Length: 353
Image (tube, rainbow, N blue to C red; front, side, top):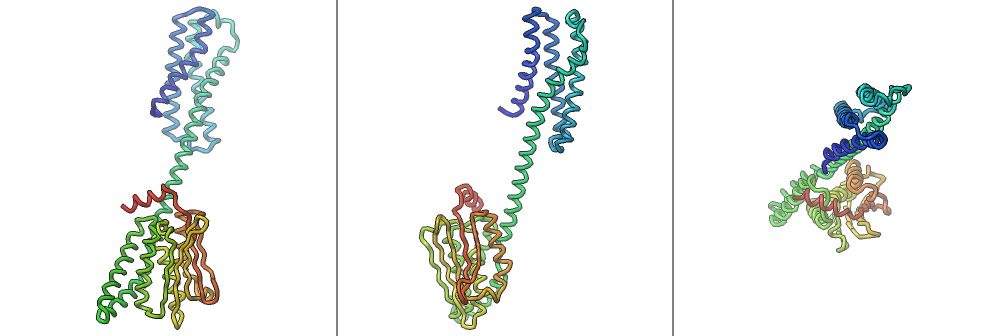
């Protein structure tokens, strides 16, 4: 049943019950009177009309968004006004129908007025509280959706970044290979194409399989090896059970690039990069060790800050990232990633299509 149907059902049923609580005892004591019955029907119709008018007012002027003191003032004013209308309509009708019973009652007006105000207060307060809670819930939902949209926009920007200097250097390296080693040049072009494709797709995918991300890292390292030759040594070790673990796209490539830029490239004899992934206590732990010294660099600056922000956006407090000096001349970047829920994984799969 829709909210509209529920509303009208409660309106009709509620006002009918209120009138019956007065009509039935009167009929049992004084007998059935057609005039009293018509008065009861008129009150049901009038009560529905007045409270529905209140509903239109509160929705049109959006009273539920007001601060509680101002909202309470309007509720009390509405109760007093609608109660006065009900009293002014009923008092003349009852004087005609029930003249003998009402003739000697003192303070008749105030008795009627307080009774109608009591009934209307119950209805208006119930509806206002419901509408206020509903409005607050919707506003909270909209804030959550807006926050999610902003975080998703931030995430897209962060995960789609690729260092243009790397592309420039890679193209220069490939150009040098065209005459020296055409076969290797073709392979390098394929590897660069894979990296660029993954970079373009990164803004449409929240996560990728670890094995896909490691292929991107391997392509990147192979291209850098063309540039650094024997000055760069690397290894990639992976737990077979972790290859389908969901990780942010291009994240590991950024960390490896940071290791080469601030470590290997500054060593006269070159250096190494080691990528290792394993599952520890239901967490995917990825460590990237490279030659270098944190004391002589800015620790990667924006790139590493983006990594931490991306992990926070996607996994919240479940993920962790740190970079530290493992030992002399060896820097370690460590990423801990929890397993994503099925809902998030399905959302990621939908975005890939």
